[in-house]
Length: 118
Image (cartoon, rainbow, N blue to C red; front, side, top):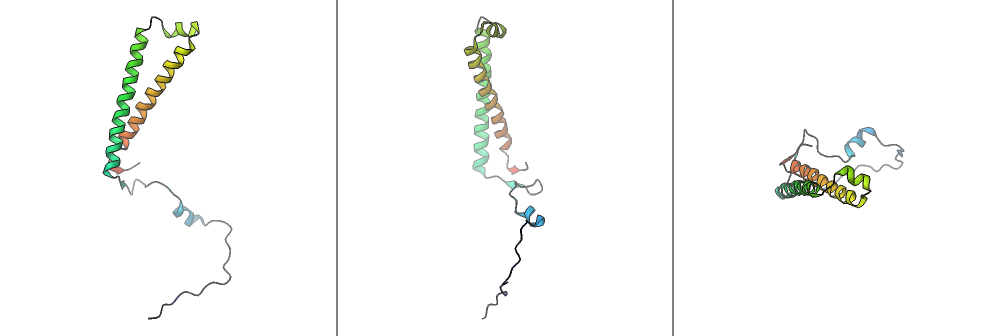
């Protein structure tokens, strides 16, 4: 059995620019909504668990900050007028952590589906 190969091209033209038709095929992108990809079960469980934990953590931080704000004998404007920047920095930092964990948890819970349509 004889294998035939194509003749080698001695003087192949050098392309200086990319072909737009083949460039579109070669780009890295997520799956389209027309071709959804099924996620593995362990990824679904992990996203659901950590999403749930982060949502509850964000809600708990919000409740804790609310209780601390109710317990303190001054209002937010009193703290600003008195120059209590350390109190405001701590409350703002924990408020940011709570909001960020809540929204990251919501994103993970949204990702905890069987199909990747996004």
